Image (tube, rainbow, N blue to C red; front, side):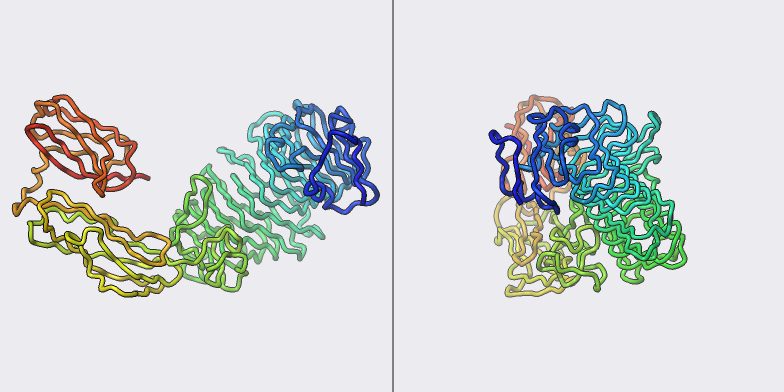
Amino acid sequence: MKLLDQKTTGCCITMLALCFILSFPQTGESRILHVPLDYSSIQGAINSSVNGDTVLVNDGFYQEQVNFLGKNIVVTSRYILDHDSVHIYNTEINRSYLNEGVKLINGEGPSAQLTGFTISNSLWKAVWCKNSSPTIRNNIIRGNKADGIYLDSSGATISDNEIHCYPDFDMGGPYEAIEVFNSGPVIERNLIDGNDPAGNVHAIYLDLWNLLLPGVRTDIRENRIIGEIFGGLPDNGLPQLIHHNVVTTGNGFSASMNITDCAANLKIVNNTVTGGGGIWIQGGNYPDIRNNIVAHANTGIELWVDTATVAYNNIWDCKVRYSGIPDQTGINGNISSDPGFLDPSRGDYHFFCWSKCIDAGDPLSEYTREPSPNGGRINMGNYGNTPEADPSVACILAFPDTIDFGYVTMGWHKDTTWVILNAGHARLDISGVSTGNADNFSTSYPGGMTQLNPGDSLGLIVTFHPLTNKTHYWDSVLVTSNSVSPGKCYLAGHTALGVDPGPEVCGFEIYPVPVSGDYLCIKPSTPWTQETRVEITGIKGELVFSRVVHPAGVQPLRISTGMLKAGLYCLRIKNDALSLTGKFSVARH
């Protein structure tokens, strides 16, 4: 097929971009119509286009309505050429709240594509698809007093967009982020913002009037959803799928998934759901709820149906784990365990290596897309059976993580038990356990190789035996192994040259302990009458703070500790008349 560019100069499109534009079935010769170079408006270019053409829009502000007029064309910003998201932000279709923003309501098919725009200030419907199945991809739909995308009898594919709701009661609102009316869309890899503290609006509203809607298949997958999926899905014998999504509801009461009517083939699989009311099925029969994580919700799973499959889910930190059915914990692979999310505040729902959600999904579920080693079993949650799944690895949990032996008389020793646990999902191979300062600290590890299967533990004795004339000792125990976690333990000890001086030796009070904020207070037991140096050193003796303070009697001294990481520190106070030491810990959350 030959692609004819209406402008013979000043336009060069990469072969990759051409392949992308031509990736849909077309007939005849296709043209590229440039806006504003050839046409002053997007609609003007569409009016002149025929099936298979591409309307290529430069960055700019386009105050107009866009109607595809039933044509299977690509309307795109320059994002399609270089995938630079700046083009999405800088190419805006703005309706000034007059009416709909973009209309695909005349039988457009999958090769009708809207790509790379910001669509704003629309009224009623920002993108309206009726009796059509277009592709809506890589757009930002926000700032509208309208449904972000409204589907009416549509099989649209909605991919890789950012879509926002309008929660206020004006201009006919509130409006959903996506409203699906008697439709069977594919909704994938979008950021869908349906956040509403009052619970009046939804991220995805499934407005179903015909429970037997023929030929309709809904697939909601791999989205980041803020708000609620609400409504019904048809019972027409075709699979209806909600899978691999992260759904977060922040208002504390709306169910993250509230399905009013469900199909016999409804599958809610490998989702991560946090906050709100969890998963709630109000009607229908035979839903399959499997490999999900529901955490920090009012209710984990609530079912008002006669028959359902509930298997291999993790319901954690919910006020009520199950409602409408008996508690399923411990049955059919369902658990209640801290999922160990890596950084949920930043939207990262990967796991720490000790999470019990790794290799805990249905043994019959497909797992081969997970990276090796994958344990031959799918993970729970939204990354299960995806290339982003956490691998099955050995993982050390060592406790305690800090040992303070206190005062030990020179030439004597003190023992403390230390435990290494393989909290991971693969065999742990330990080849060494050592201390840095063997003259003063040692362990009972006999040497050689020790193998621990998942869940097994090894107990060791860690000994402090001060041999040199020092007041303070710092060291650490380090495990050499195949674990992805270090298994490190910090050690501290003190000597008093054969005399236990008791708790008053430091000569000052430190508070708060542990330090969790930005300040540490030091209150002298006796007045400081001359300039005094205050020093803070780390566990290995490295100097992290030094300051000279003027005489202050017994008034507390406040020191900024915002620069200190979590750990154990030594504090030293010295002047011509005294030299005092103490210790404190810093905890960061």
